[in-house]
Length: 337
Image 1: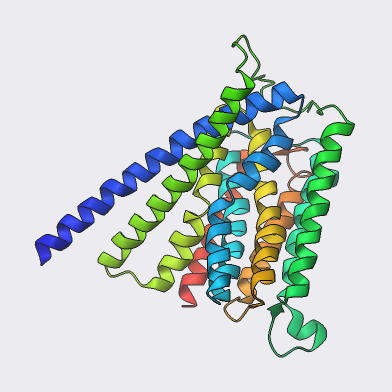
Image 2 (image 1 turned 180 degrees about the horizontal axis):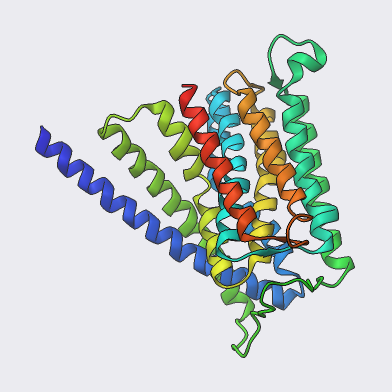
């Protein structure tokens, strides 16, 4: 029996490594393909990051939340989105900024980040319905779900309008002024599309493989399901965002990384939670004040960091601070179990 367990753990470790490799390869193809499409269409890397990459990398959250809503498991559906958004803003944006400072445009500060802030505020408001309207439980009803889906439609309409009504804005505060156009031969559109689709598939299947094998290893070592949910599930479904953002930062394309985080966060709340609540009303019994406070704090900090230290930039010090806040959040969450 012990020998069988050892073999099982070794197999899970190999699957873990394979999943991670698939994630990294998929992220590389996704970023390159999305950048090529952006240049061909005359769109900014930020717009591509906020739409194709942002929504595409939210597929794991969508699958988990929709499946949970169908099964009537609201805690997983809501907790997955809350945990993923907190991980996206604090850990992913923090790691990206730590690797390569993120330059911000005026549109990012005046329109894009405030939209993400609005999404967080709406979710926090729904999570406080007990105090706001006197209901007995915090619930995201079907009406709320339809409202969230409508807000997602507004978000997409704004994104498409802003991408067609104005030329991509150049950021004068860019960290290194590095242009990805260079002297490389332009990638054909059909090949770029294949790279995006293939990259997304690699991220989704690799992320699923990684989460499943990591969960199996944790259970084999006697780690509780509660700890697995807080750490592996929330972070695991955000692995596509983490991989694509880090690869984008490595390629000095932090504009796409920022768009990925904002697009993913807005999609998680408006599209995924909206769709989940439309399928089945979500009772937020498992949502704690710490979760909502951290979600709102992370969104506010993303906005405020545009005006601190070096303006119009999320620099390495701020990135390190975001990571520290996430670590503190995880520690406090584990202590409350």
